[in-house]
Structure formats: C-alpha cells, structure tokens
Length: 326
Ligand code: BEZ
Image (cartoon, rainbow, N blue to C red; front, side, top):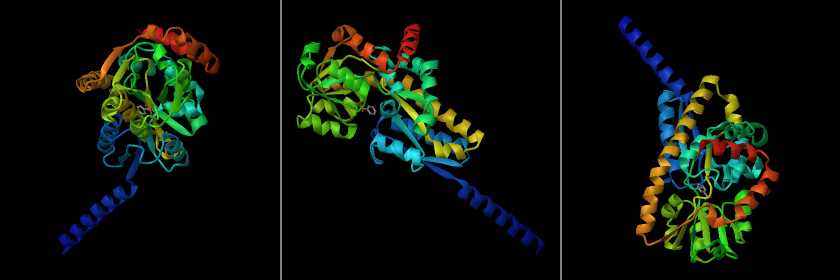
C-alpha cells in the first residue's frame, strides 16, 4: 500500500512538471515576406529547431513566410503592438522608419556577400541597430543578407541609356527609388509577391532583384536580360518585438540573441554558393547575362552619394569602413 501511494506521488509530481513546462512553453511567431523556399525562411526554421533544443522546449518558433501576415510595413506594426514576436525583415522597411539605414544601400559599398558580412558586423552597421528600440519599438539582434542586387529586364540593356524612361520595379524605399530616378527610369515601388504578374502584364519593363528571386519567383520566364551589376548589398535584420523583449530574462535574451545572430550570419557564407547555383539555372533557362561594373553607371554613382551624404551623413563612416575591408 505504501509503495502504491509513493508511486502515485511520483506520477503526480511528473505530471505536474510536464503541465507546468507546457504552460510556460512559448511558441514565437516569426514573419517573413519571402517564400518558404527562400534561404531566409530556411534559416528561420533552423533557428527555431536550435532554439527548441537549447531551451529544452521552453521556446519554439512557427514561421509565417510569403507575406502571410501582410507586408513588411504591417509586420513591423504587429511587432510594435506585440501581435507578432519576431521577423526576419529587409532593412529596406526599416529605412522607411529610420533613414540612416539607407546608407547600407550605397552603390558598390561592397563587391560581394562575403564583404557584406564583414561590413554588417562592423561598428557602423551594428551602431545602427542601437536606434531600433527607441525609434521603431523593436530590438535588432543581427544581420544577414540576400544576394547582391542586379536587374532582370524585358528589354535589351547594353548601356545605362537603355534604362532611361523604362518602368523598373523597385522595393518600396528611398535609396533604391533615388538610384533608379538618377538613371532616368520610372521607379515603380512594388512588394515581392506582386512582381511576377507585373512583369508578365507589362506593368513594369524590368525588376531590381537578386539571382535567387529571379530563379525562385520564376522571373526569368518574363525577362530575358540579366544585368549582372551586383550594385548593392541587401541586408536582412532579425527583429524581436520590444514588448516581448521586455518580458524575457537576461539568460533568455542572450540565448535568443546568440541564435538569431548565428543563423542570420550563416547566410553570408551560404549566398556565394546560392548565387553561383542560381546563375547557372537562369543561364540554362536561356537568359542573356550582361556583366556590368561601376563604370556601367557613369557619374550616377557620385550623384547618389552626394544626395545620401546629405540625407544620412553616417554614410561617410560606413564608406570609410567599407574601403578598409576590401
Ligand atoms: C525585394 O523586395 O526585392 C526583396 C525582399 C525580400 C528579400 C529579398 C528581396
């Protein structure tokens, strides 16, 4: 009888432990604008697995890719109210709130994704993250990247003159809008999910994108010229809702910060291979590749620099740092 009572006690204690662990377990909702097959979504999933393991099941992550929760602007609002816990978001959307982030899009700041990794982990870019809590109500835990920017056009593009007067799809934010306006194009702001149809129905003549998007969104079906300019880097930032952050213990903050940074930083290494694979794919699909360097853009690059040095003087620091890492 005594043994039976003891056994029941053990069972109740175990059940209570499981119940309280389940009650305190938290599933974090993480939003992304990119499709589920995109490298950012893959990184978010890997981070969730790592987090569940490291926290012994206290935290898990459910990802909402492909803009299921709305545009990045909407996701940022949800982070601010606490309706969303985390996002892997372009720094483009952040630039709409905090213009200093626009300096990350200075043309030819870096030449490749590896240099992007060094620069984004340097003091100027890291310093920008410090602005996020006060100016956007979110906490920035680290950067990753997408592929270098280029153009996929539905018209012959052998020189910069060919872009003049063309409707070019851009991500909706000022640095890239300025860039294409300086080239004489009609900048047409448009979020990712709308791009394929816009190119198909002639709403735009070309797209500012990267190799992964050209392949995974099948843009190569609607544009036959790839201007391989690699003219800008395109960072992603890992964000946590300021409201959630305030509730976390110092240990949990450190764990979430470390894992977010680790998985986003892994992208810097991965994109060299992703870009090579996607280039081969689009070439096999019959796309004509036009290599283009800074000389392709003539004096437009200096014009962009002059404009943005006025809008965000921190550009001078970032440019100096970039030159020291090449
Ligand atoms: C874009 O707007 O071009 C974009 C958005 C998210 C990831 C990569 C690119």
